[in-house]
Length: 172
Image (cartoon, rainbow, N blue to C red; front, top):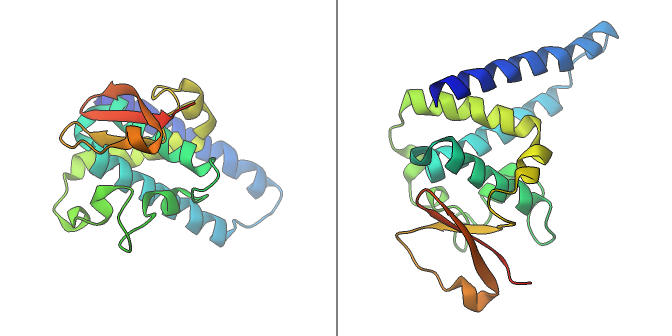
């Protein structure tokens, strides 16, 4: 896993250099608002991946990111990564349990956090590729194997299990 993350981090760094070069060459200044939004989105995705699937490895984290990106593009869900991940928190029930259970204030593995940050950058650089992989088979929801919500009665069907997570898509 460590090698994949390092390769991904290098790809992001190279990509950022390529993206930054045209603006600098034309004498344009970086847009602080856009940079702040990009940083916030990456931090939110990192938190979502780390706390929901950090123990699942890269496959589990990619699957969670896929659900986040799919929700962004689905009517009725928020349109930013941060709003998807923190949807409902703390008001009426969190979409992602860590947003309400206090997990974010618990000590973190610095190594895993860094690896997750790097992966989040790679995934955010090309969410279309993440969605095209469709590893969750169209899922909009997931939960761990430790709980059993009755999502079938809400019009969802199980699609796949990745690690300790079961994924669900709307019934067609």
